Image (tube, rainbow, N blue to C red; front, side, top):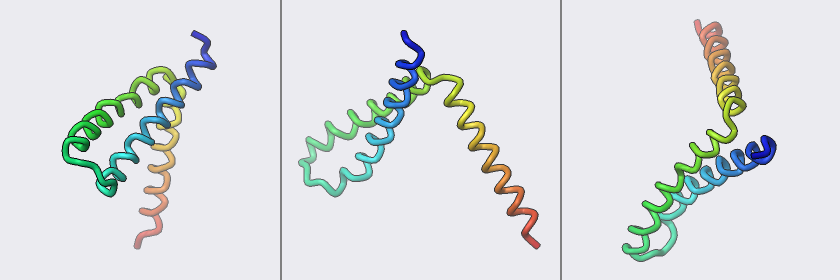
Length: 85
């Protein structure tokens, strides 16, 4: 598989999984019957595992970006602790 294609596919799957999680929070405000809710919620919850498929396709790049975000968070915490009396 072309590395560029797998990267684009992986990022697309990750974004799609975030959209599915957003739909979960909107569903209570949509008028559906109980049986429709009983079908929609499990389907969305199971299909959100798409995130991990996308993460596997993106690979090291995704892990590296999460580590950078973690380092930024630690830096902000240390700055906040320095400013506290």
